[in-house]
Length: 129
Image (tube, rainbow, N blue to C red; front, side, top):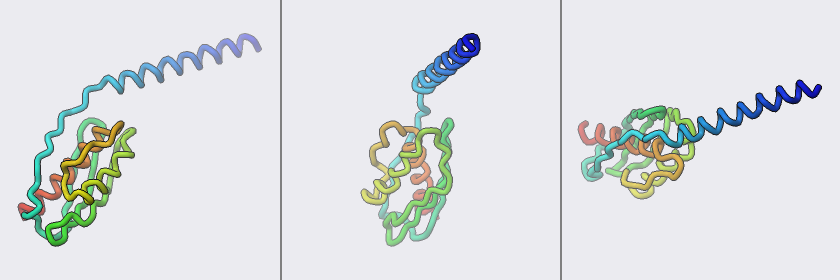
């Protein structure tokens, strides 16, 4: 029994060491640079437009609905995000402020930027219609 507990203790210690090292490795990764432009809402055309963007481990697909040059709705179709699920509230910030120039969600920066970029792509599709 004592030998079994020793083995279990060693295995748990190894798991803790591995998990800790992965945590610090992920935290030390440099985020890809995402350049987000500006969009002139006065040029938006009514309709629903799709936007897709991916960077690193994050992939976003969404739909943006425009009505009377106003962002009415943003529906996230797909968001592969790792730990960035909480970034999805940024869509409400964009709708409320009527701009993609909003702050990223702390702790979910890459997901926030990917969502903002996907919205930019959708808005530009509206302008270039």
